[in-house]
Image 1 (cartoon, one colour):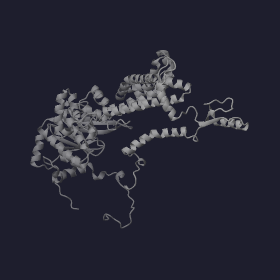
Image 2 (cartoon, chains in turn yellow, cyan; image 1 turned 90 degrees about the vertical axis):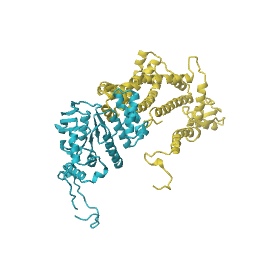
Image 3 (cartoon, chains in turn red, green; image 1 turned 135 degrees about the vertical axis):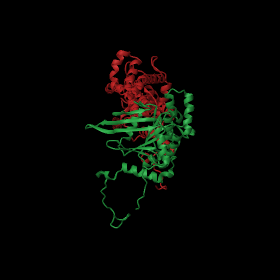
Image 4 (cartoon, one colour; image 1 turned 180 degrees about the vertical axis):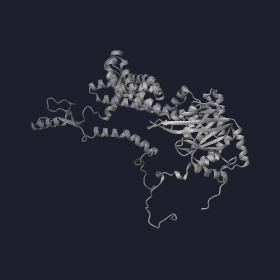
Length: 325
Length: 302
C-alpha cells in the first residue's frame, strides 16, 4: 500500500478505526442530528412554514404570539396594506410541535424545578422514578422465570419441545392487547403495567435465551463428560458459565425491549409515570416539555446500557468478543 | 531416478523385538471386540466401522491412521463413550464400558478448554468432579501444569495462550483426571509444523514419565511412525482394519530417525496401504488445458 496517501480507514471494509477517529465519529453520531435540528430551528429559510405574530396591527382576530400559516399571514398583510391600515408584524416560526433546542434545554431544567400544578400530581423526578421502578420490576420478574427457563430449554430437548411451540405462538400476541384483561385481574395501579411489560419481554426472552444456550459449543460438553462430569454438573459447571457472557448481552437488549413497552403499559389503567407527564404536557401543548421527557428516557436507556456494558467487561474478563457499549 | 533399497518393515532389530515381546506380556488395558458402527442413510444404512478388533497393553502407544472417511474419529468417539457402537464391545481393564467416563481421557483437535476458567481451574475440573477438595485439587493441578511447563500461565485464560500451549493444557487436564487410557483425536492437526514437532517430542517425554496408555489418531504418517509402538491402519468404505503394524524404529525416538531405513520402510508401507496407486478415481484426475506458449516449459517434456 502507498504509505504517502492519507489513511482512509473508513473506506476499508471491517477495519478498526484509530482511537482518535473512533471517538470523533462516535461524537458525530450525536452532533449531526442535533446540528440538523439547530439548522431547521434557527435558519428561517430552511423550513419555518408558520409566522408568529409579534404585533397584530389592525387585523381583528390576530393576537400577539399567535402562530399562523405563512399564506394566511401574507393574505392579511396584503389586505391591510391595500386598505392602508396598520399592517400586522410577525416573524417566521416553526410549528409548535417542533421546539428549538434552546427551548427544550430550558424545559429540561424547568420541568424538574416546576412544582406540579395540582396537589395530586407528581414532580417530574417522581414520575420518572415511578417509571424506572415499573420497568425494572417487570424486567426482574420476567428474568426470574425467563432466564432459567430459557437455559433449561436450550439444554434439554424435552423441555424445549414442551415449552417453545407455545411460547412461539404466544410471542406473536401483541402485549397491549392484554391491557383490559390485566386491569380486570390486577386492578388499575401498577399491577397491569408490570404485567404488560412482562408479557412483552418474557416470551421473547425465553426464546432468545434458549437459542443462545443452544449455541454453546457441544464439544465443551463432550470434554466435560470425558472428565467425569455428570448431569447437573454439566448444567451448572459447563452450560451456565459457558453461555453467561452471551446471555448477559441478550439481557441488555431485552432491557431495551422492556423500555419500549413502558409507554403502552403506562397508558393502561390510571396513566402514570413519565407517560403521564408526556401526555399531560402534550395536552397543554408544552411540546418543549414533551421533547425534554423523551430525551430523558433516551438518556436513561443509554446510560444504563453503558453502565451494564462496563460491568459486563468486569464480570467476564475471559470474554474476548466483549460487552461493547 | 535410482530407487532406494529399503529393508522390509517387518524386520526388527533384536532390541526392538524383545521390547515388543515384553510389551505383549503387559496387562491389556483396552480390548476392542468386533466393533461395528452403522448410520442410517437415505437408502438403508452406511457402515462406518466393520468388525474392528485390537487390544492395547499398558503403557503402549498406539496410533490410528487411515484415509479420510475411514471412521477413525468415529472409532475414538465410541471408545470415549461419546457415541454408541452398533455391534461388538469395548472392554477397559476387562470390564465393558458404556458412556463417557473419566477412566478414558480425551484430547480433542479443537482444544475444548473451558474459556471461562483459568489454566489452573481447567486442570482442576476433572479432579473436582471426582470429589477432590479444592485445596488438594489445586496443588495436584499445579503439578500437572508444571509437567507441561506452563506454571507461569496458571492464572491465564485459554484465549491468552497459543495453540500449542492450549493443547498442553488440554493434555494436562485430561491426565489430571487419572485416566487408564488417553484418547487423542488428531490433537496436533491444527498446529503449525514447528509447534507440531515440539508437541510430538513433548508428548513422548510425558508418556515416558507417567503410567499412561495412549491411543492417538492422526492422518500424518510421519507423526504416526515417530510416536507409535504399533499403528492401526484403517481402510475406508467400510472402515475396517487394514493392518496392525509394529513400528520397527527403536526407542527412544528422535527426529533424526525420520531418515533411517526402518523408518522409511514403514513410511513406504503406510503410503502403499493408504494411497494405493490403483485407487485414483476419475474425480481426482485433472484435465488441464495448456495456457502457455509451445516451448515455454518449466519441466522437461515426458
